[in-house]
Image (tube, rainbow, N blue to C red):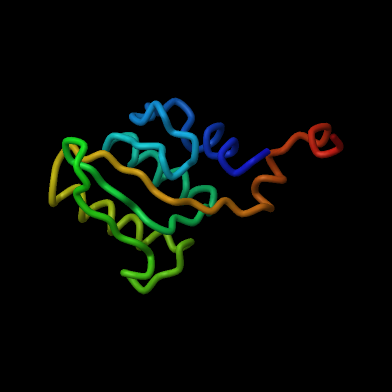
Length: 117
């Protein structure tokens, strides 16, 4: 299982990707409501978020990364704060992020038969 497959199956499940041309995880764009779910799930699984990018009416609105907050990418406090800040600055933004799924987490969700191939 790849990082993108894990994100699609466990984190992005039942959410609407607003970028139909997305081929990489960081190209997946979500509404504010769906991105709140993404953040909740990444925190649950211990997935790192390195940066968050936002758009308003298909124009870049703003971006931030964990280094701007002096936090590790795996520290969910930074991305919760960043998300809340964007949310209060502008309603109706679209959100995307760059992720890092721990390999141990992926291996736990990969069926053993697939590992032997």
